[in-house]
Length: 471
Ligand SMILES: Cc1cc2nc3c(=O)[nH]c(=O)nc-3n(C[C@H](O)[C@H](O)[C@H](O)COP(=O)(O)OP(=O)(O)OC[C@H]3O[C@@H](n4cnc5c(N)ncnc54)[C@H](O)[C@@H]3O)c2cc1C
Image (cartoon, rainbow, N blue to C red; front, side, top):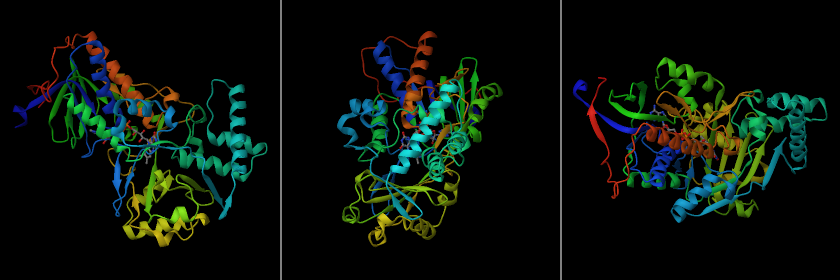
């Protein structure tokens, strides 16, 4: 009966209910309120059954909740997203922990090192980068080349190992040649940051509640498979063949999803977006979480939020001990190696986690405290993310939300301002705000926004249905 079906019609259709998509909708409401006009009708279509995208909880077999995606809002109290969220939702977010990332243990050749050698490696790389920028102010350099410069001077095998750690465990890359030093060295925040004790998904719950209260239509379990510009707007079609029309659309899916062409666009849109997406790698990051009975970390004198980096293995990994103050060991592994672990049967997964953790002398004896199954995330194999976060290739530049006709592309990869930390939650929020304001101004220019009536919107009241033109 497709030919007779009605296609829901909105002012703005947002594809993806991750942080960028939710923020776009909220910004549209904020702008309407600030300018005293009726908010546009907004629909968010989300492929997954859960909302929040790469902000998500997971529950371990002993009942402990963990952040499967975003953990740290880097920069802590300085992070604009954290500041804005606290101002809006206050206690609704629950208590916030601040992890200063100063408790660190480095393991090489099975022994425990101080941080002196690491400070030397950090300084050598920083000095080499600063010198490079003095000599080549407009040129980026790949980390592999920067390491090469250091090795010609006084760099040691540990300088190289530290560089590889940055590429795999910070950026989620396999190769230092894909690591843009401009992007890394202009990130103002670095590691650690603010964490929501009750889980980052609390932020999503607050945002979704606010949007639904303001009549935003949010529909999970709806995978958009095509999106086209039309003469007066856009037309989207989901995998069941249902169409949705709107004046404008925001696509907030990951660059992994864009690369896979899960959503089909017209050729002129592809011509615009493809070169940009090709300049970005979708990096991988996996978390293996091992719950412990309380007491172990305290007994061993390991402070909450201690980072233990193990450099002499392949893949190199970072163990976050006492994650968010919980009795939990979280192994972070980056790069393509992640895919080998994502789909392991439980018994192999438990064995793998132990093989990693057994390399850390500081936590020997942890096996007696293990309190449940090892949990593993699956961002690389999730068809709606296809990786963890974006990394721009050396020599390329990020772009702010990109327009192609009536379609705007937003999300963590679309943040040109490195102060807003591309690839992080902060960038998703920033690009969502820009996209929302840009579309708002656009709708105003074409006369789509009416003066505010003196009444509160009612859920669903603004959804108009028009006969489907497409099927
Ligand atoms: C393991 C891991 C750890 C991380 N750690 C941190 C951290 O500590 N700090 C930090 O700041 N950032 C971190 N990040 C990065 C952060 O999660 C992302 O930058 C941010 O959440 C991205 O938000 P987004 O809205 O741009 O994209 P997404 O969250 O990916 O949202 C896009 C949404 O679109 C949906 N979608 C995809 N295809 C379709 C379709 N065809 N139709 C409809 N919907 C579709 C997806 O399901 C998803 O919900 C981490 C990411 C991972 C994976």
